[in-house]
Length: 165
Image (cartoon, rainbow, N blue to C red; front, side):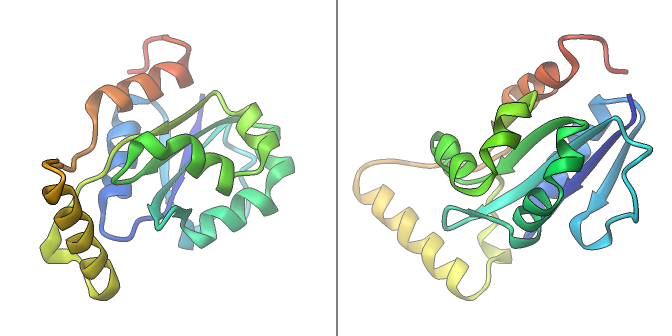
């Protein structure tokens, strides 16, 4: 099965997740959302990957999903997001992905996300500081990372448990 992973990344976490998924699948091509090919005819499967910012998936990924519904419904489809709050995954998917694509997808998963405060800029840095401060006041110590178990489960759903390498 020839697979295209179309992803959007802001600080690198989504790209890293896409690379890990690609390593676990055979015959896989990574495609940045800003460098789309003219055609997806050669692919049997399309995986969409996006970061979540303030509850919203990256704009070009949302536009691609909406504008390419017919294409995506003809392919095996999977969708992942990288986010700080994977417990909100259902809301992220329902608010950002057309329902017919969610129903069609073999896998939809929030994979967690890495957090490097030194790379954050402007409003992102301010919001991150506020969230961490609020959590700390509640006695919550958050660690941010990609979840290997979620990635493995995502790949398993996509491959129906078949060997991938």
